[in-house]
Image 1 (cartoon, chains in turn orange, purple):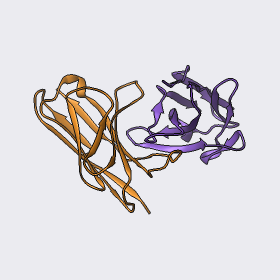
Image 2 (cartoon, each protein chain N blue to C red; image 1 turned 60 degrees about the vertical axis):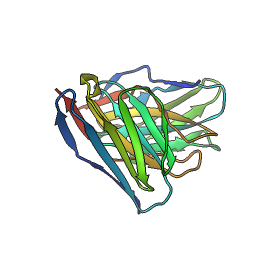
Image 3 (cartoon, rainbow over the protein chains, first blue to last red; image 1 turned 180 degrees about the horizontal axis):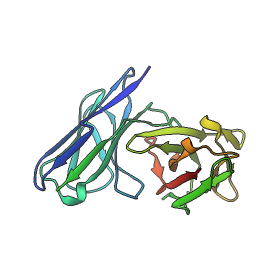
Image 4 (cartoon, rainbow over the protein chains, first blue to last red; image 1 turned 45 degrees about the vertical axis):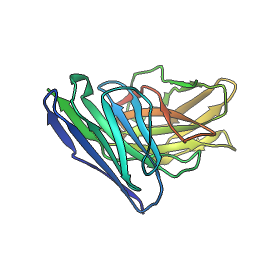
Length: 113
Length: 114
C-alpha cells in the first residue's frame, strides 16, 4: 500500500531564516506531487505541483520554491522566511490520471516568529 | 476559471441530528467533485467523489453527496451525526483534463454538540 510522509511535524523558525520541508511517498511510482498551504481559518492554497522529476509548476508567486530531486521526493524551501509564511503545509500525491483523488500527508505546522 | 464556494464556515448540530454541508462550484468545463474531511492537526482524508454515473454518491462514515448539474451543487449530507464527526470539511473540484489539480473551497467547520 502507499504511504506519504512529511517531516518535520512542527517547526518554529525566526523571520529571515531558511526553510526545508520534505515529503516522500512509498509504494507507488511516478506520482503527481503537490504542496499546499493552509493558513489559520482558511482553505487550502495550492503552492506547487510536479508531474515528474525536475518538473515543477508554481501556482502562486512568493518567496517559496519547490524541488523534486527523486521520483517520490518533494521538497519545499525558502531562503528567507516571512511572518506570512506561517501555516500548515500539506503534501499530497495522486496517480497521473484525471479524476484520481489526492492522498494527503500528515502535514507540517510552521510558525515563523 | 473555476471556483468552489462553501457558504457556511461553521455548522453546529446536535448529536444524532441530520446535517447538510453546502458546496457550489462554477466552471466553464466539466469537473470532478470531491469531499474531504480534516481532523485537527491532521491531513485530509477523502470522504467521497463524483466522477460520473449516479448523481448520488455514498462515502465513508455514513456520508453521502448529491451532484446537481443544473444547480452546480454537490452538497454533503449525513442523516445522523456523531461526536466523532466534528471536523473541518472541504469541497473540491478538478478539471476533466490537465494536471489533476484540486481546487478547494474554504471549508466548513462541523461541530457536533452532545
